[in-house]
Length: 503
Image 1 (cartoon, rainbow, N blue to C red):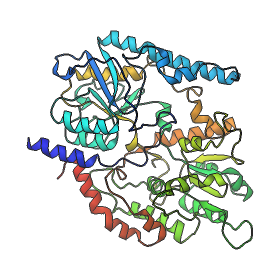
Image 2: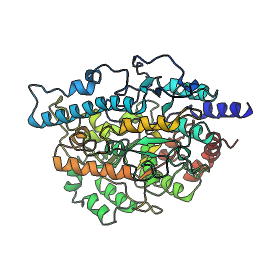
Image 3: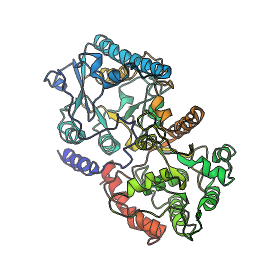
Image 4: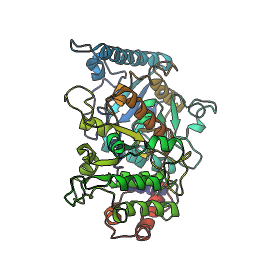
């Protein structure tokens, strides 16, 4: 009972805050805590009290397809949207056909799973808060409501650290795909040797949630600056070179004595996170805080200097509301050289009219490049994506037939029987290409940069620890990096102790 009470307190504390980076999903698939639960014909049974699992429930907070409760292909809006229209081009029809084929394969896969394992399985939309509550109560009580939970890191890490999530290394054979090729699924390593947190693998999942450094191609060309992608290919894309470029781009273009074009504009959390990753640094990527490390100090100093020494940044919006939107979207005005970019931002702004609804596009091209390498960074090993806000899963301890439960989830993801060519085809991923550019060649180049970012991932809980960092003080110059580190290092360590159960 003493353990249960301690773990309950840990979980409740650790799940208070959700990472601000959780917006990285494809438009239409973004997790939404207020989603209306999907109605299914799931029997009202508690399978965890049975010797066998004949009904498998996956607790989620957004609608997913398909499961044993669906009645037709049309239940999935993706299938409905993929029907050909009179106005469709031949390319549209090809893409529609691929989308329908994928839906049909997923639909057929439900019956295969049911017959193979003798089960019915259901996605149960608990809402985001409901998933947290279910983990914090039913698993601790020893009778989990669900056999699998969709989670984020703020739920998953405490569950693993406190023994509430099943270690797949104790259940699956050592040569399983999740430990070897990782073709369909992989697991998150948080440093304790266990494999409790798992996730699906696909090209879409690699590019999802990436924020490569974007640049206004015409602005760089107009200023006779070499393409940063060429510099990156030669290993010459560094912080110093980035500052040099931004200084050239920061100008008074109309001669009124006021700067109206800037080298850089970005939302502070995304700026700091990528400066840290490009410098081989992180604040909370182990059980011991590393905020106080020298590489983090260098990233903080770089951010401060960008605003206060080099003066290359668009004036930061310090308003309590609106800063996120202002700093993320200023690039669309055409007066910013470099800026963090995600596919969902480009799509939300309709930069290149990917669905034909606007009839207009930006008058300039945007290209993506990896972030420049910092003094403590390494181009080969620098991370390009923080996976803590990713779509993660756990199987709670105490579930009956855990290997079968996992295999149902694995086979659900493996809807084309090991063939991933359709899953990762350009036609299937059309949205990810078309939102980034008008030119097909540039679309492919931008997609490859997002893919490379996703292939170099890190795990840093710094934005999921339940407190606010005053990054405005670094940007304004009111706080030095050393003061920032001293102010927050104990809070980071205390939060990590709560996460990992070290109190």
